Length: 133
Length: 133
DNA sequence: ATCGTCACTATCCATAAGGTGCCTATATAT
DNA sequence: ATATATAGGCACCTTATGGATAGTGACGAT
Image (tube, chains in turn purple, green, cyan, yellow):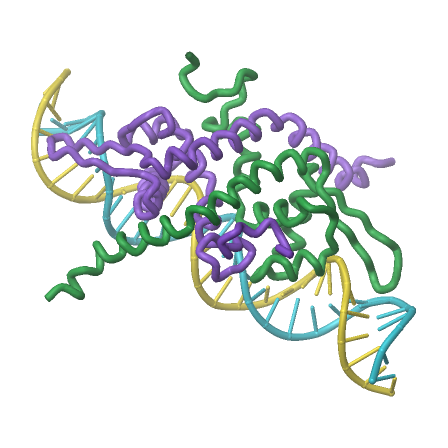
């Protein structure tokens, strides 16, 4: 019996030494999510990405793009012009992933109200002693 | 078409103040992924979860479960017996999410080899000077 | 001549992740 | 009597990460 939802090829993200575990670690980043979603529509330049992702610092943007490039999800193209021009686009693998991540993003947007309520209830349950008579 | 993949209700995960952005931040955690996936099949006890998720410390497990409980994805049930017995299960909202996260997990397991190769190529490209004749 | 653009790089600091050990309470097993 | 299992809480510590700030080089605009 497969003890889990283990994939048929012996990969198991629950095992820390499994390559799929490290893939999951890489994906478990807010900025990876957003960057992949942002590039879903087509190639973008560094500055365009920075403007799209409110709050991201240049450092995090570069770092995230380097990771995505290293893992073969994003292709980086440099135009040797002045001022420098660099464009990023999803590889086929990246496109493939983007579909799933967009679903997560849509889920987050759809269920944000419920979760906000749940959080409010949770903090009310803890803070009520302070307000109680 | 709308300028982005923005959801129809004005929620936009790209905006840092949007509730959906904080939801995405919460989801962007390796342990949240795995915990939700682990609970997908049904309720589990703390110890069962700990054994299933290789490498998680009791501290991180508790912390993760508290967050999931706070956000209404997990329900915690305490049985007042000795030795203590506590069970965790997904709420309906959690079940809903689990489907998506499982897809991500499956994706990670399916594409782990490709990504491993991409990483190997990347480090070869950087380390080749050391090995080159 | 100085400012801004562009795509970074480097540095610092605050926070978070993660590890370790010790504590609770009691029923069961040895 | 001692040890184990259970599900934590609590305190302390080290390391990794996130985020903020500033700098770089070459140019174009003002």
